[in-house]
Image 1 (tube, rainbow, N blue to C red):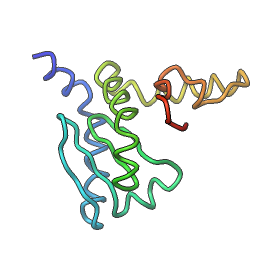
Image 2 (spheres, rainbow, N blue to C red):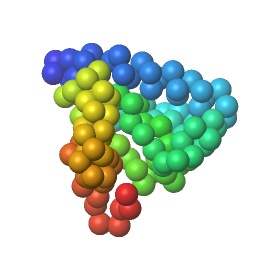
Image 3 (cartoon, rainbow, N blue to C red):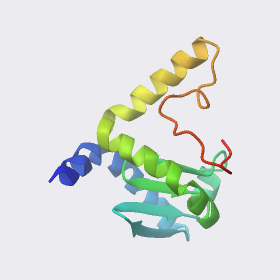
Length: 124
């Protein structure tokens, strides 16, 4: 029952991720389901995510390609769990914290408390 509410709480953001997943599917990308999370890579996502490897949007993980998805999955799953806790509040809170960090002279990504610490071999 708790899982149901986690999906429901994150649903508004997940809907945005699913819309972007349609872009991937319509442009030759791959879409699948793994552990209750929709994963998409390739197609139009190569261009859309050219500045990064992957991103979590609710219960959706979008990646440039299969290698980026495989490498980024543990990191992005940590963000999926954050969406389960914060729901639709996560995006604005994340960006407000990033702006606050920048104003304080800190790095808005590397110093962000919502960013999971890198594992051995990971690069930011």
